[in-house]
Image (cartoon, rainbow over all chains, first blue to last red; front, side, top):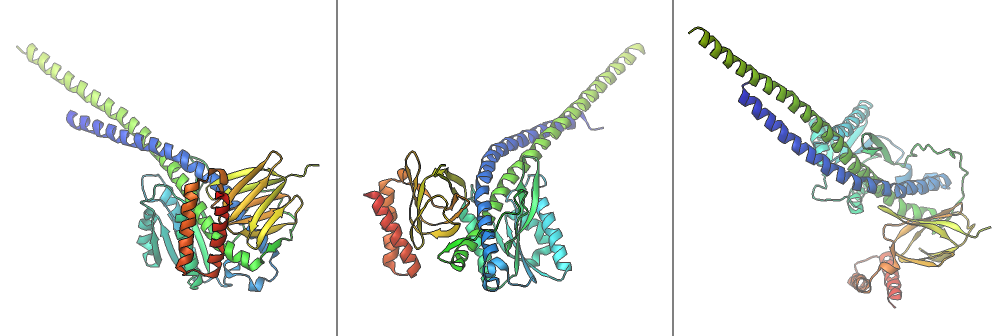
Length: 294
Length: 130
């Protein structure tokens, strides 16, 4: 049985923890709104960009000579995996979920005899991946000192990827990130960006007619200009989704923590009151029995 | 039947404009290009210049540095990271941009393509400043 003093101390410490989690929750909620707005605003751009690329792919006349960024190197031996995570912890399963998905993929690829190379963006992912797959990590990036993710950050990552691709360092590139669905649900996702893969769309007009586009100057030049941009755009989208997911995830986690702390305080208070009462009763009994024996 | 078609300008972080236009002039890489309704499907990219959007009610101008344009099914889509409404540009800031660009050209370490793009940028900005 813990002493009264111990209980008092515990109640106090739980209460101050609760204050912290509550504050974190509120900060996350405020940031979430902004991040969510950004993510939603960013969606049309990346979606339309993807669409243009797909249209281009469909109408390409000479697939053999098409840029490699679009059609791939024709091999699938070396995979570049870009794992996007947060730089901060205390956000529930956010980082773990991405890493779990990434690790499952790594395992699968390795068991198929493929090679993997890993780029981590965000320090929390690195910490989790380094333990098992440290030797595959070729590059670590993080944007710790950036308050707000802008397109520049995405371009840094994008350039890195393209540079490696031009050096023939890998055949396929997959990015891992959390897709922000709503505050409670974030879905970890693996998206292949090189070669460009069609995202499953729920649109009904799947059988859209093949449009024959007029290109100016010509297909190749447009593709050369567009494909690197598309990579950065997809990374940017992933970063935005991630930022929103991180805040959402943190908010729910901190909300739970606050509630837990509340429950714990209640429980401890009852304990405290009981043992206080018990000691009072004990003292009374002692006094009374002492008086009776006189 | 209306002669309008949908125009959208989207940048990575937000949608800048969504409206209907009668005619849109874009600075395509190989020259100015006017687009009317029922243009054939088109994909092209842009050099620095002005996008002029003629609507029923008036005209809107945007200064852009690069971007990609897709036209299909009577909807014009302009993807750019640099679109700025001409009205929102200030004279002083334009002057600084012009100066910076000129410095870049005079350094002479740039490729012909960049030089071409920069010269258009300067010309357009000068025109705005007039």
